[in-house]
Each structure stands twice: as C-alpha cells, then as structure tokens.
Image (tube, rainbow, N blue to C red; front, side):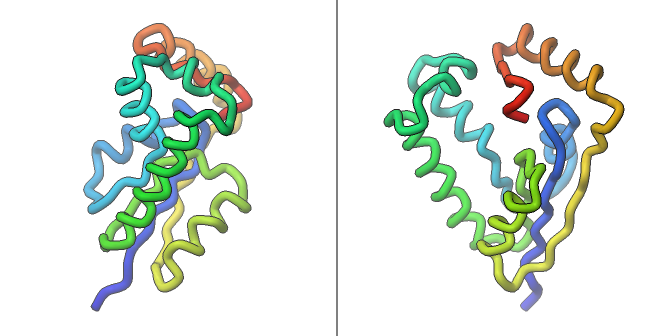
Length: 138
C-alpha cells in the first residue's frame, strides 16, 4: 500500500494557490474557502459579512465543523492538497498531525517583493466577486 501524499500550499491570498489546484490532479482538496463559499451562499451573506461575524457565531461554528469533517474525509484519499495560506510553522504542524504516516510536500508561492501586485489582485478580486480579504487575514 502506498503512503498518502499530502501537498501543503504556502502563500497569502491572491498568489495563485487555488489556480494551481484547479490545474493539478489531486484526489481531495482541503479548502476552507470552498466551505466559506457554500456557507455564504446558503446564508445569503457576502464574504466580508461572514468574516465580520463573531468567532462563536453559529455560522462561524458551522464553518469550523464542516472544515473538520472535510479534514476527516480527506484521510480516505491518497493524494491530498491543503489549499490554505499555511504561512506559519505552527499552522503547518497542525496538518502533519492529521496524517501521521503520510509523505509531505510543500509548495511555496513566492510573495516577497510582490506585495503591491498581491494587494492589487486582491482588490480586483473583491471588485469582481465580492471576496474581500483584509491584509492581516492573508
């Protein structure tokens, strides 16, 4: 039996992580954004309104529960990708605990010295889709 392969994407918003996932072949994608998109659609909220809700608001708790379920579901697959920012070592360490026998790969989306471009892209995405990401949320 082959080991699970877990690819961890590292980079702030608007650096190409989700585009990379769309162009790649993975068995399962762990993505908080996909869950948020479903929840805001089901609750008639904007992306910004969702993130303005208090941490313990029932809708925010639902998002965390669905994310946990998604992580548990991912354990049934061989080739998994985590499409989150994963910027800190502590955040990445949490991922490792879910797959104790997996082989890990990391892909860093370079963002140093590209801050202007990233902020511009985030602003354009907000204008086009309403997906608003504050600078300190990336």
